[in-house]
Length: 152
Figure (cartoon, rainbow, N blue to C red):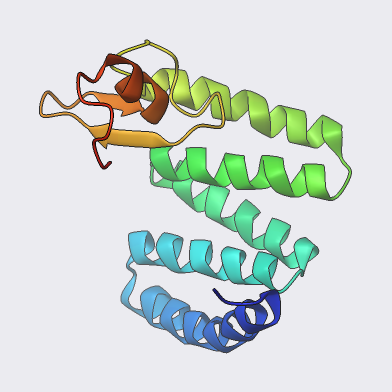
């Protein structure tokens, strides 16, 4: 297991690589790649505890994901911004992003196939996608599984 110091060193080393990848994505006009690279840069900034930069980059990610109409990327970005603003002690702004998270979860119809709860509304791990393309919570799967010691 890596220490937080080792993780921050990885983040510091990864950031310049993300910057060069972003420059290439801008040059080639690949907007989805720009979105993915910016998301990585935002995670690096958060890992390096540069929260203002993490917010700034996440705002760019959010704008780009809206332009591309990528609801899943919007969901991820709103969730990160919700957490960041809580960390920065701005509960009002965090609440706004939390509202968008819940709305996008409903729009994307990400429901547990067993208990019908919206995936992501409670902090619980997702077990797996079933063959029928249903996604289920780990606890729901364990409660309905005939074999209690299945590895998930």
